Amino acid sequence: MFTFNTGEFTVQVNTTKIYGDPFELINELYKIRQDDTLSKEEKKLKVQEAIKAYRGE
Image 1 (cartoon, helix red, strand yellow):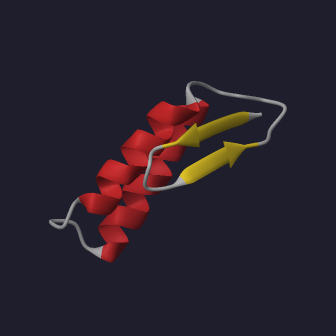
Image 2 (cartoon, rainbow, N blue to C red):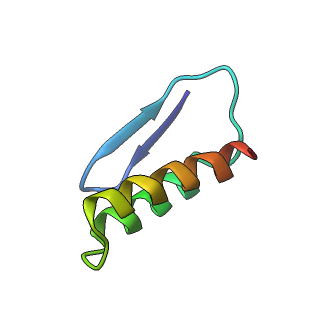
Image 3 (cartoon, rainbow, N blue to C red):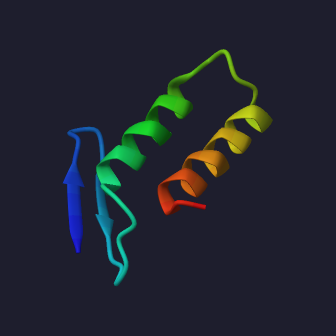
């Protein structure tokens, strides 16, 4: 189990398979969330791409 506390939120990852550094994925997702230049649909697509890249797909 991995636990990350960023001060703003705490994330616990419970899994038997870790693809990479979960903090890197969280950081990438946070950047997407904070990007006001993207529409909701664009953010959704970027999140899906980030997760696929994290998994190596």
